[in-house]
Image 1 (cartoon, rainbow, N blue to C red):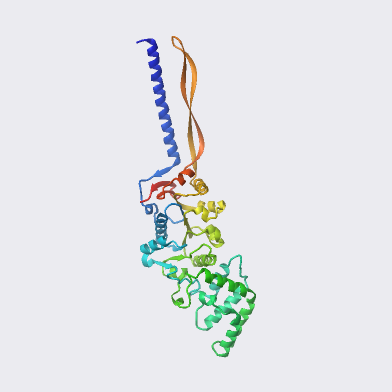
Image 2 (tube, rainbow, N blue to C red):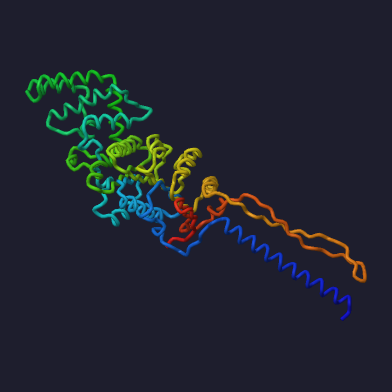
Length: 425
């Protein structure tokens, strides 16, 4: 063989070997990067398979993607909490798909309040002190009720009870404040109450008189916000609330219609606090609720722990926190399970990429060095070079979240430390 031809063949052989080594090294680096990402990729699965009823329940967030998948996730999470002895409350804004699916799945173990069954009354079977505490703690910053308002509410409740009736929301909403003292005097003159009781009631009404206007405003606003939820005089005997549902070992579901119904939300949350004070474990689902619009619910999110858990679920949980990173990150940090799907907002995708974390990625850069060789004659040759460097990279990039199909999900389980990816069937 001609030596020049031999030289050319040898060069090609070395080049081929070098190329193969480079490809193998790159493949090893790519495999190492995939392992460092830590994503476990499952075949198409049912979302329910990722909830273990034997694992202690905790805070959760279901964000983005298809609403039917979020509904299935809520149902499975509620079932796990129920089996672990938690009282479950589901609060939503007109999520009729969730309502239908919950009713079909839980049957008699679910009690639903909506416009077709407007029987909510937080005051049913409550003592005067409980009614007072629920009212004062459910006021808004715009119309607070000062502490001496408790005397006025106590007087109203005492007068209602003196007429052999129980205080209900509707009775305080329709209270004839302007001639209430006259009615007390009339009841005394007719012998329906004793003089001692009349004096006690009037004394309390006068002590809290300065807060009468704020109390009227509170119940007027509640009447508007609860127009499709609060029971009225005709059905008060069948009224229901969180406490009754807990006593009957039922899941309690309320359609509040809008996140703007702050007093309604406040009453529900404060009922939950009442149950906690009685030793109940509570599991609250806030579906499509703007937490940023309600200070009481936001405070509940901060107080969650072993005996009080919260699911926040919507098409964009970051926006549910009003885009406030501090509150969003604090809640995400307390979540034991996060189910994430497609989002349209690039900014929200960025925030969820932050939640899923980052890893050390090896980056490859290829180069070529030139040199002069002499083999029987002068010639110019080259050698391929490969350099690697480390950099921090998102486990799931924002653009990957934005490009997901609506039935694809990432599931971050902080109990097991697994980040799963699958398509839901």
